[in-house]
Image (cartoon, rainbow, N blue to C red; front, side, top):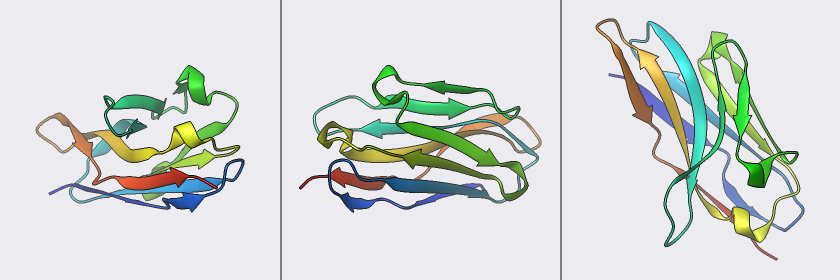
Length: 119
């Protein structure tokens, strides 16, 4: 059984910062791409940022220059540093990872962590 556990969400004022973490655990052979998605009320889930096992990154245009994704392969953990937060960043943030568990690779999702940007 593989689990992704997120932490770090909360309430922050506009212009503030938060750091999200997502740790994968279980019978993991290897982890390929990891990423963060978000879903605001009434909107579809969207990709925020992704990172390959080699460290290549990809960002949504709306967060470029403000968010930074990184990972610690030894800890099976991915991070999202969010700076200069805006009210429109308010959403539930989900961690995603493509994990090889021996018989194949599968996409796994975290339970989500709420981020609220408000004064």
